[in-house]
Amino acid sequence: MKIENTCAVITGGASGLGEATARHFAANGAKVALFDLNEEAGEKVAAELGGTFHKTDVTNEDSVKASINAAREAMGTINAAVNCAGIAPASTTVGKKGPHPLDMFQKTIDINLVGSFNVARLAAEVMAENAADDDNARGVIINTASIAAMDGQRGQAAYAASKGGIVGLSLPMARDLSKLGIRVMAIAPGIFLTPMLMGLPQEVQDTLAADVTFPKRLGNPNEYARLAQFIVECGYMNGEVIRIDGALRMQ
Image: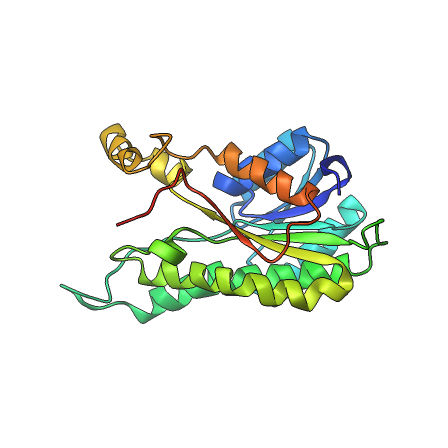
């Protein structure tokens, strides 16, 4: 696959890693369809890129089916799906206010893990109809894990569990879809300068960056996007999780 021949659906495409990926892909010739709940931001980004926006609840089967069908109609096909939609609440298992709220845990799993699987399975159904290339390939799915899956800190039980699920999903899904010529990869980012972190005071950002081994800074979302492009174009990458974290190992 070449990025200029890519027709990608990108969840969480209205901001953060998803927006950076959409912008990078479009700048390099790809067609993009943005899935997000934020209509105002999504429409704005899609218009700037010449792509399409589809309001999508990744946890809802009908919502994703409708967006997948609309994206396929707009782009002609789908041969890449990048799952960036997610939330990152914080709560200890038992704290001063009692046990971890169960609804918060369930919501995190639903959006980060179930939502990614929901989009991946329905995108794969469309990819399976693509004509195979010389490598018998028909598409690629990129899910977003996190280094929290391996190095989860205090207060990250829900988030780390959801991202650990993404890590565990990669190989069996790659094996499931191999007969269809669809690859599955996961990216595990460290601490990236997304809108959530950009809202923190500079001294807090500097403290977070100081823990990174090298370079001593937060990740740039465009670095995630460039890695996603590399995965799309490198057909031998499959069933693996790639950390992109400046060698950060969270304590």
